[in-house]
Image (tube, rainbow, N blue to C red; front, side, top):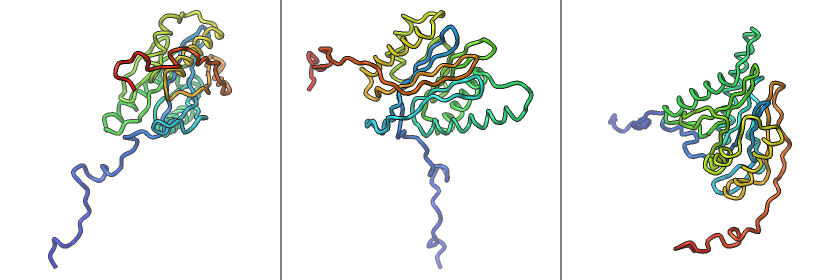
Length: 245
């Protein structure tokens, strides 16, 4: 028998790992997360839409979760990758608690961990398809940062992901100040979320606002914003646009 007749498994140029492609193309995604510091802690807002391609398939997706005692995480992007990140963080918090030494991971440590995870997966060309917002309060110090799917990260007094980075940040730069009360912070976040609802096709009018202080995390029940769609630009959005349909 000719040895050439025997079938050999084809592993390809990249080896057997090339057969496993996870979230190289995101399927169910969430849109913007917006967060800011206020005088007592951190406020964060996200809607509850989950888009299957360009279709708003799910309208009750929670994209903000408490992490340990001192941190709050919000995510835009692929929902299944967000669930994988939450699994990583559950293991991290459990390992930290097992030491039982009276210390616990603060928001800065959790944010640093997430930057390493995202950058590591990016270097493997198998990224976690998310942009993450991590805020928290520990020992009276508020912390707010974000990290992108390729590991780009920074801290600021207010952050946003997705369309919010283009449409909400200008509002926050103009109106945010360090002595914001809880009511003022909520009102400012609602203004940002209303603009995103008008301008982002992936946004849905069902949102949650979460706060984290020294006392812990509180996430609101879902609610809707009052909207006004009678603006002339909404009635005929392509009027005056050259070459439009």
